[in-house]
Structure formats: C-alpha cells, structure tokens
Amino acid sequence: MQEMVQELWSLPRDIVSDGYDAALEALSSQLPMNIHAYPTGTECFTWVIPEKWTCHEAYLENLAGERLFSYKDNPLHVVSYSLPYTGELAREELFNHLHVHPRLPDAVPFVFKYYERDWGLCCSQMMKDSLKDDYYRVTINTDFSYATLKVGEVVVAGESDDCFVLCAHLCHPAMVNDDLSGVVVGLEVMRELMARKGLRYTYRFLILPETIGSAAYLSQNQDLITTMRGGLFLEMLGSPHPHALQLSLAGNTQVDKCVELVVKEHDPASWTGDFLTVIFNDERMFNAPGIGVPMLSLSRVLPPGNNDYPYREYHSNLDTPENINFQNLEDSRELVLKIIDAWEANRIPEPKFKGELFFSRFRGIDYATMQKDLHQIMFRLDGHQSVADIACNTGIDFSRVKYILDVFEQEKLINYVADNG
Image (cartoon, rainbow, N blue to C red):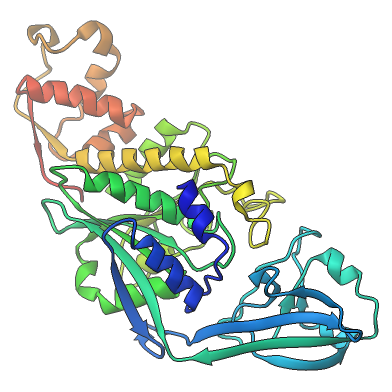
C-alpha cells in the first residue's frame, strides 16, 4: 500500500483530468479492472458530468517579477476548476480570490469550484499576511474541454449475483488520507478476495470521483441496483485515530448489524454515528431515494465538534505520506476482511430440536467454557433471527455466537437457512 501511495499521491487528480486518468490507469495494473467512461454532459439522475479541466500554469508574482507561489510548487495553489485569468490587480481585489485554510496558518487549502465558475488561487495564511505590496500579477492558464469521467470497477464473483459494494474516491489532488487511503485499502481487500474460493456473494469495488462518480455509475447501471445488498465506503483510514463508523440511512439492516458488531469487536475504541452525522461521502448517493442501498462509511475521523475534525491535515497540502499511519491502513484492511467474513457467515440458524437442550448429551458442546452464552443463544433459535440478530440481542460478540452455532450445526442441532435480509 505504501508503494502505491508514494507513486500516486502527488498527481493532480481533479474529477475529470489527465492526473485522475493517469492514477486510475496505474491502479488498473494492480488488479483486473473495468474502467467505465461517461462523457461530459451526460445526465446522471439530477447531476451532469462536467468538462475536463486542465491547468497548464498558475502563479502569483509581484510587479518586480518575483514568483511567490505556483501550481508547479503544489497543485493546491490554484482552485480546482478555476477559470483562466491573467492581469495586474490591487491587493484588495486579489484577496477576494485568494483562499486560505480556516485552521492551519501554515497550510495551503484544497478549494474547488466544479460548478461555480470563478478564478482563484490558494496559499497559506502566513503567505497571505506577507503580501504588503499594493499590486500583484496573477497568471492562471486553464482550459475546459469535453472528455470522459472515469470509474474503476473491480469485481470478484461469488455464487450469487447479489453483491456487497466497497467504494472509495480518487479525485482529491495531491492528498493521501482523503481518499487515496481508502482506495489502496479497498484494492488490497479485493486482492485477498480474489484468492478465496466459495464466496457466497459477489463483491464490487468502485474507484471514482466523489459524488458525481457514484451518480454516474448508478444511473448508467440501474439494473445492478437491485443486486446490491449493502456496502461500505472507505475513507480517511490513515489517520492516527480509532475507527469511526457511520450507519446507513435505515440504520438497522443486516449489513448495519454485521458491520457494527465486527467494528466494535475489532476496535473497542471505535465510535459509531447515525447516517450523515460522521462524514459526508458517496454513501449519500447509495442511500438516496430511488436507490436505497444501505451503504455505511468506515473512516478514522475525529468526532464532530473536535477542533481538528475530521482530522488535522484535512483538505490541505499537509495531507502527505509523512502524515499517514500505514500500520492503520493495514489494520483497516484486516477489519474490512473481517466484516466480509461476517457478512458471508450471517445466515439464519433454524433449530432441529424442541424444548430446552440437554447440553451434556452432546460431546461437541463444552458446557464448562460455553455455559455463560449457551442459554442466551439457544433461546433465540426461533428460525427468524440471524447470527447478527442474536449477537445484537444478547450482547455477545458476533464471532462467539458464530462459533457456538457452528458447534450446534456439527451436532446436527441446527441448519443454516436463508440469506441476509
């Protein structure tokens, strides 16, 4: 993962751009990937695919010709999708178009105006404070052209066409945690799934530009929506914080229960919030009216209200590999694989016995070590509750419930039936 990050992070990955396309092409060499292309102007539900944006050059200089900062220094120095502009202007007018980070005085912010056309530059507050001349010269050489927005799709087929969707966005230029971190974690999860046999479900991993990419993919593949049983958006996983889980709009689906149980078991320091209370990403499009796919979001953001929410370097040039915890990326990969294991295992146990079990009769049941949980689980074998339901209703870890139910199955006391609802 670290090698992929180092190779791709500095590319200017604006939503429709050569930098984004180059990054996606490089990622497609990692695993078999379908790349979907959606032309500029395509209507995607209520959204429209924008033009390709190219920045050839952008800089600020004083009238003596001294260049103060430029796009070549860092692509964040120009507003993404800025209009072209060349001219001399007063400092006051310049400041109307010069953006700074709201919290970090030494950071260059990430500012975008995809649909609100204007020109703009970005710099640190410290740089802005140093601008004392009355006049400056601005050069922004950009153009807009018809092209295609691209979405990468990695598919691992299972026994069923019903699928679980992983998703991450690639579109933030010269930044890592938001959300190249989610992209590389998702790719490594899919690499592991490709090596597995006997998966019950199909798994899709979508790499896309934020929001508009989901609108494009879903609007142009509406026949697949009914096969999407649930999903997980992967975002900001390189922060030095515990996992943060955002539930789906419904909040109580089988996928919500499976994911929440596994996250709490794997990372006891994690925290959970309802839909739209943790972070905003493409899970919005999947949960939206007419689509209704219960997609959750997994990240490592701080709680809203924290001064550094969602993380200190957010939307700035400080979001670099040096500020990424790569061990946390590995840990998140392990967690996502555990979530998938639980999703695969989450079926409904149907009892083949009547009455309270005489546990001592069954050699596979170790009453001494299982006593605490046996009755709690046994009494919930009503043929309606899934493994996740039983874990939620008893407060017993998902893995523990599944272990005991597997012993019951070996003793021919239950059959696993039905799929996730």
